[in-house]
Amino acid sequence: MAEARPIRVALLGAGSVGSQVARLMHEHAEELAERVGSPLELAGVLVRDVNAKRDSDIPAELLTTEADALIHSSDIVVELMGGIETAKEYLLTALRTGADVVTANKALLSEAGNELFDVAERVGAQLYFEAAVAAAIPIVRPLQESFAGDRLQRVLGIVNGSTNFILDQMDRFGTSLESAMAEARELGFLEADPTLDIEGYDAAQKAALLASLAFHTLVTPEDVYREGITGVTSELIADAKSNGYVVKLLAIADRIEEDGQERVSARVHPALIPADHPLAAVHGGNNAVFVHAEFSGDLMFYGAGAGGVPTAAAVLGDLVTAARRRVLGGPGLVSTWDQRLDILNIAEIETKYLVRIEVTDAPGVLASIARILSDKGISVATLNQSASANPSRATIIIGTHRAQEASMRAAVTELTNSDSVFEVTSVTRVEA
Ligand code: NDP
Image (cartoon, rainbow, N blue to C red):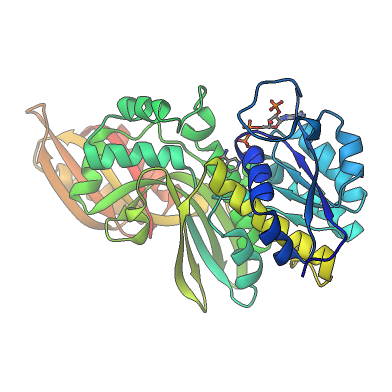
């Protein structure tokens, strides 16, 4: 039976996600009140312009531009505005007034999460952000709570639906990068300015959050090595396929133990994964996060990584948790990043590679390439040679065993300077 005192909720933003949160709160009010033990009351909805034409059914009298008054009269503040500075200011105000906050804003968290968590801890308030990474897919709470008794070793995520859609079109239908991008734009997967998605910035913000959560250590987007998908060619997709791989833009977070010292690596780049790996089956705009934990083994979380309604569902889950805690009491979430592990530079990581090289079609060339690689400590696992469009050239595709990135970069420089090599066309990391 719901208790009498309603929990007052401020909604900051009434866009794709905010309008759906308001709708679901209204349509499922009774059920939510049962779950919380008290009704949830929408105290107001902050927007930029109360007179703007809107598709949502939010009652006009709830719309406001008075942030301070709304925040100060609420128990829980749900931030769905996006952006960094103003959202941060409002959430700090909310936390300082003792309100709990819910946000889906990965940009804000990856830039200012530490400051927000510090304030929350100081005042005893809670900060929930399940929707900030991969929207509807429950991954934040599992990393914070379900794995609290385990040790995570590796997180591999397909966390950007737009780039997954593009790479999937290229892989499954042989579409060029340009056409796949045009299709993604038409279907609403890409913003007018696609840089955040295409260049991997969005994925890097999520990688920073995943690594921070997985290894209880602060990782910022600047700590994340980042390459986008603009260098992915149809040729690379074909090479991947003929070697049993698919190309995915991965967010990768590793715990690396060496000489008794633990460090963390976080990176975002196109990577080859075996065609039978569970992540290879993540098609279209879907997201997935694959986790390898010391005790739990391998697990994968999969589903819609964006969209107003799925994201609103994750936000509502946080809202119910926050509201229940206000009604029933009880401890909050476990603290997030209390360890201070060092972050590896990309040059220090170790992985396998697939390398495509255009060479002179002459005796002794393969031996000289193998020598350059082995001088750098890189051992060859597979080698395929095919004719090139140019009769005096050949294309060789080398799969390596694990090697250090610095060694691979040094080898590429030497190969590029070698008389027998026309071009090192691509060097792609192989993961999983
Ligand atoms: P929208 O751009 O659709 O909506 C933003 C809303 O916030 C609008 O109602 C806007 O007001 C309001 N707003 C923005 N700035 C201000 C301001 N300074 N003062 C007052 N109101 C403001 O965003 P989304 O709903 O798509 O995204 C919201 C958040 O959720 C973002 O952080 C995003 O990263 C995150 N997210 C979104 C997902 C999605 O699929 N859309 C998926 C996962 C996370 P007005 O209506 O007057 O313009």
